[in-house]
Image (tube, rainbow, N blue to C red):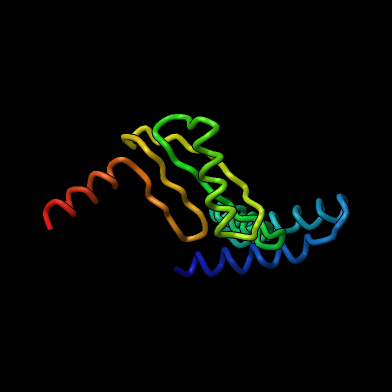
Length: 134
């Protein structure tokens, strides 16, 4: 838990330092930041810090990161329908990434913020089973 708090603090600090800086200033800030991480043995947290930096940038630019997970590459129509649905529920600009998870039997899962919209075949079968049992 301590690491999560540290990651958030470090990411926020470096993000605020980088906003509206030119290339030379950015390079200097990044070099100093990496040296700080190395000196304080925080380099193993770099991946988490970078993920948090991306989240801060997306929030600042009003971007909603969406991951669509499916068993196989989705056709254009499926992605378009998922995008339309999400655009109805959000005023943010969508940044969609598609991920393949071969463990899914079919359907898809849509992940954004702290939400998961499970439209997988397994979930649908489980729902059907529950309705038949009750």
